[in-house]
Amino acid sequence: MATRAKRGDGPSLFAAAGLDNDAPRPLADKLRPQKLADVVGQDQLLGPDGALTRMLESNSLGSLIFWGPPGTGKTTVARLLANETSLTFVQISAIFSGVADLKKVFDEARARRETGQGTLLFVDEIHRFNRAQQDSFLPVMEDGTIVLVGATTENPSFELIAPMLSRARVLVFKSLGPDAIEKLLARAEELEAKQLPLDAEARLSLARMADGDGRASLTLVEEVWRAARPGEIFDSVALQQIVQRRAPIYDKKQDGHYNLISALHKSVRGSDPDAALYYLSRMLDAGEDPLYLARRIVRMAIEDIGLADPQALVIANAAKDAYDFLGSPEGELAIAQAVIYVATAPKSNAAYVAFGAAKRSARDNGSLLPPKHILNAPTRLMKDEGYGRGYAYDHEQEEAFSGQDYFPEEMERQQFYDPPERGFEREIRKRLEYWAKLRKERGGRP
Image: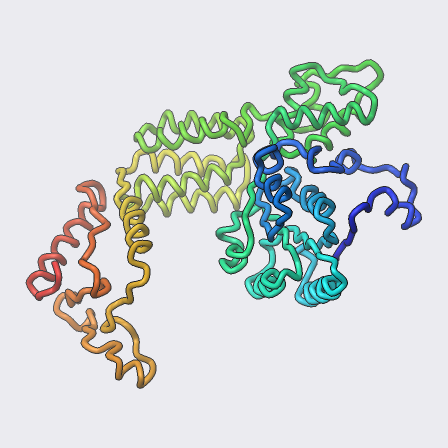
């Protein structure tokens, strides 16, 4: 479950294990960079002014979280960092490791530290650890027993606990662009001393098929070399038949992807179902993940329709579930129906704007306590302090509305939500105006 390597480990590891260095190895393994300068596509981290470059120049390496798609070099960079800093490299996977494994790794790191040797602990898929397991890292990160480098494909803000994020810096790994993929193809040709049997267009198609994943690009290269007969050159159509993978019409991680999803979103916002269906169809035809599109439609229902038609979110979620249940191509019709619904629904961003305003107010007034009359008093001391005193239970009041003030006493009443006179929000506006009238009549703060 844990692999260890010290500075200088390399081919001698094979000899020590009694393995033949000439045994078949995947191309991605043979081309694994031996120094940080060989890593491609991450100049924002490893270029002359990159974040990791500056850390190494300062001889100060703290705990890090590597966030990015598969095949972008997260594991490789972690291993090379250990070499650059003379730390012992230890690797574990959150998928296969439990509390007992962590305890053993931490104990070994403590023993190693007593001899003057530091430990770089690389944790793959770190987001798979639960909260209690993540908590166990905090003391050894805090006292320097380990330098943690965690790798994740998921957003750390949602998947990792705040105390861990406060002790580690998040570094973003980007999908490899066409130039970076081309460098890998050229290195593969140099290593194997042969050219890829592809014409220029097919070479570009192979790079698009890799979809920003360096490891995937080298796997495709191996498939091409295995399939090619002497003197055979593949065009893009033949390439797709050989590898049984379609080249996307646009790169899902680059401008084409963002341009089309932007066009789809704005067509929905502009209440044009025909244009929205056109862009949806283009993205599906390009091989876009339908569940990605379904998630974006859910976002449209929340952001651009909101409470003007509460049913829009229900329809969008139902389409996502229907696709998840039916798959392609049948489930794509559910997504198309959702697009038509959200495009023709009344539009409102009032809830979106209100939430943003409320978040800004919460940041500015985050230290204020709620008024005591709306707080529970489970203990005698809290009752004596006035918790819950004077609270009026709304269901017992006339029209189930007490008109009490719920903002902190130090704050004026705020109005974040201002529903327009459209769709269902017209009815919500009537309710709010009526409650404001009752609140004023009953002596509450306007």
